[in-house]
Image 1 (spheres, rainbow, N blue to C red):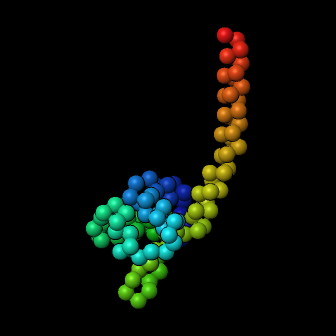
Image 2 (cartoon, rainbow, N blue to C red):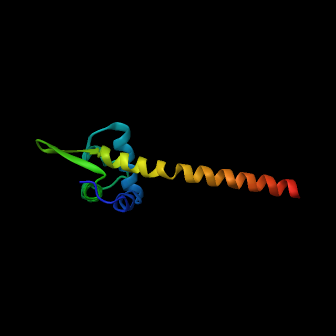
Image 3 (cartoon, helix red, strand yellow):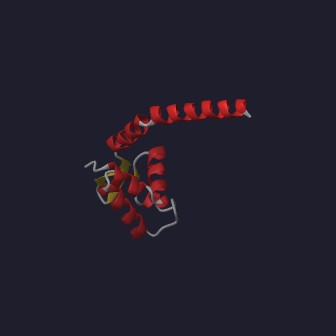
Amino acid sequence: MFNDLSDTFAALGEPTRFAIVERLLKEGELSAGDLHDVANLSPPAISRHLRILRQAGVVDQRIDAQRRLYSVHPETMQAISNWTMSYREFWEGSLDRLAKALDKEKKNT
């Protein structure tokens, strides 16, 4: 179900969808009706956002009688975390080099 991270980031790049995912991360599994106040959207609009998040592999849907319940797909969150952490060393090294260069420049002035 997990697609490419570019699909994931594209889905999360829209503020309402990002807010939906944040809410699901904080509160756990919720119905579409429980999410209507995220951005004061109509039920069809919430459903469209949830469909995009499902297609991108960001959320899972579970059917319980008449309700559709949504939760964050844990493997996708792990993939985002892994990708982010893979660049941590690069950014820390870059920032360290920048700090040294600024110190050197400051001493030369």
